[in-house]
Length: 69
Image 1 (cartoon, rainbow, N blue to C red):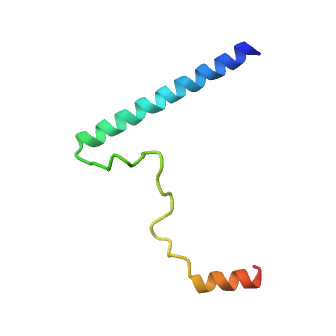
Image 2 (cartoon, rainbow, N blue to C red):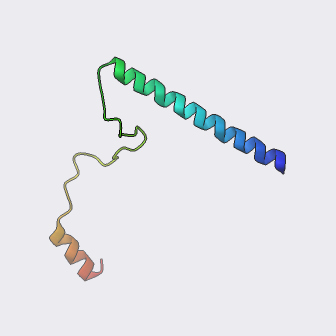
């Protein structure tokens, strides 16, 4: 059992190492192309909502809550 846990730990370490290397490559490519983003931004955290979605109508939300639907 201990050997399995050590192997899993090593796999996680290698995955983190690979992810960090990919992130560095992406940052360097972005710098080379002249695209800059703030240092506080994280590549892995993006808003995946489509830009075409209209904001929710608050009056409709109240009606849904009151109707129980």
